[in-house]
Amino acid sequence: MKGNSERTTVETTLDAIRARIPAYAELADRFGSLFSEQERLHQVLADKMADLPAIDHGRIAAGVPILVDQDFSPWTDAMKQSVSVLLPLCAEVLQLDEDTQDKLRSYLDDPEHLSELAQARIEGNWKHFENTSVQLGIDQSTTLLYISETVFAPVLSAMVRSLGESLPSLAWEHGYCPVCGSTPSISQLSPKEVTDLDQLVGGGGKKFLHCSLCGHDWRYKRNACVACGNDENESREVFFVDERKAERVEACHKCGKYMLNIDMREYDPKPNLDAVQIGLIHLDIFAQNKELTPISSTLWNNLE
Image (cartoon, rainbow, N blue to C red; front, top):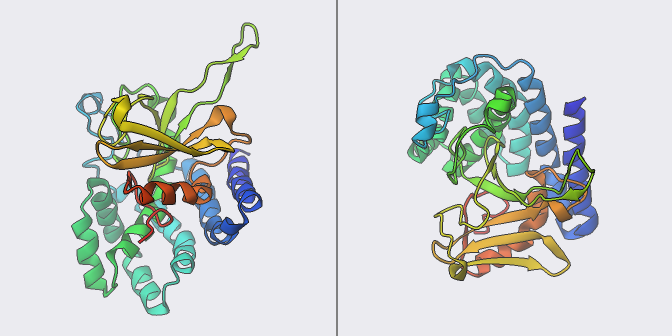
């Protein structure tokens, strides 16, 4: 039941984007099936995820994410299942020719290759993607990187769900994910809360970062730059469109980075945090016109 509910959230989010900003309808259609299938796979895989990674609290205290130095071979079957579903959709989104699709399909069919790519992505070993792309005869290494991230995301999200309540209790104050080490693609201010005692609505506004890869949400300081930790009011700024104040850009002029933010206290219905970014491209454009760069690069905020 939860899987259906979550998938509906993806579709509802995309429908809202189409209705509110017709210019984004084509993008919503282009990425819609990909978002929906990622979410469906995440739920399916979570129900049978085994050999979960151990949480070493000593490493966590030292700022080392859970999946760093992990052997990914126990999860290659799940990765292959994800490849079978998502690679054709990626090929459609990226408009890949048949030759490139065949090369990728053959390469990603090998469990060892999948494990190596996953480890390279977690370690930020971009050279591995460049070298592998050259080996395969694929012109752009970003193609292999994007497809790998898309394929790995549901598997890593399934791990996050299976780890459950052990994650929110972690003492983690960094601007990168405690699970996979990736940077966040968007942040949110938590919705208003209803107290059990008197049913009064209040509070909310706690800041959570949303991982660009595994989808984990973790608490972060509200008044600090995620990229560099800058908490000086004079060098940080928030931008928004007047009629959509719940959708914002948080900018840091000290490091030149920005990130999208949604205030859930003013946002209804609650969106899927990955899909909603398709409807915020105008904020990306605004920020990049001010010579700011995104903390996490995506297909839709990479304007070059």
